[in-house]
Structure formats: structure tokens, C-alpha cells
Image (cartoon, rainbow, N blue to C red; front, side, top):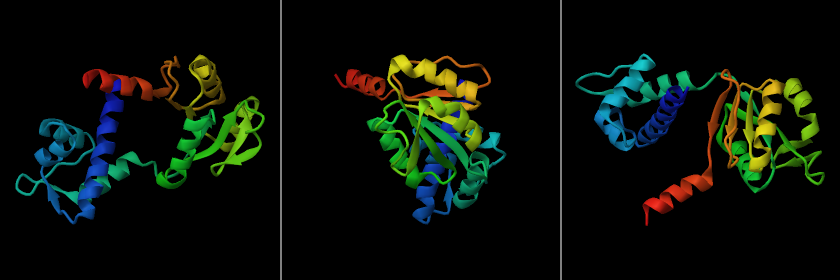
Length: 203
């Protein structure tokens, strides 16, 4: 699963780079040029693109708009995937605000919190429900993805509830790792850990 996630991450990065090249009216790009932009190797770029059935021209390289279209067809589901966010603190609100404008195929349709001041209100364009209603709302809205932005001690319990409610994937922003069944896709993003790593390397 880790290998698959890394491959998808690279394809998402190629998508962003290719969109930028397209906006600059670049017609063709070679694997070594795309690799340099992605801080990668040309061999890895070729392997990643071969996995989605695309190969370039030895003389002209890859057609930028054509390759961008192929990657979009591979990555984007063709229909909006519904998301639940659990934990509407500062980070949760920032994520709600970002997704409202940036992600056409990903829609946070429900937020959850235990704070009575936040529940039964619309926050950053999304209705906030009490955590006690999570199972019912996930089923009613056909939600397949969960985002966890709760404090670390509550992360595992939140993950368990999301899995029991029927989500297929979880993005965990809490500072503690979570355990999920093998059939559930999970990724972990600890901003503090990333910053500490950079700070250490900058000493």
C-alpha cells in the first residue's frame, strides 16, 4: 500500500507540473526535464507513466496536454467523492476553507465536533454535526473518505468510528498514528513532525 501511495503522490505532482507547463504554452517535455522539476529521476518518471499506459516519443518527448489528460483520467474518479471531517478546530476550519475552492472532485459534505457551540451550524460552508451522529450521517450522505483533525488521544477512537460507519480511506492529521483494517486506505500527515525534521536538518 505504501508503494501505491508513493506512486500516486508522484503522479499528482506530475499533474501539477504539467498544468503549469501547459499554462506556459509548453508543447513537449522530456522525461529528464519533468524529472528535474519533480526532483526525481528520468527512469522513475518513465516507470510511473508506463504504469498508466503512456509512453513518449524518443525524439519529441511527451506531449504536455496529452499526458496531462491521461493523468487526470487516471487520478480523478469522474464523480465527486464525499468526505467527512472530524474536528473543527483551527486546522479543521482551514481545511474546510481550502476544499471549498480548490478540489472539484472532492467535497467535504459533513463536519463533526463535540463542541456544542460548533454543532448544528454551518462553518466555512459546511454543516457541522455532533460526533454522536457520525454513523448516521456517513451512511445517509454516502461518505467514503474521512479526515481526522482531532487531538492525538482521540484519533484512534475517531478512526474506529469512521471505519465502522463505512469509510474506505482516512487522512490523519492528528499527532498520533492510527491502526485500521488492511482494506482501509490511510495516510498520515503530522505537520509538527515535518517541521521538526526540517529544523533538525537546518541546524
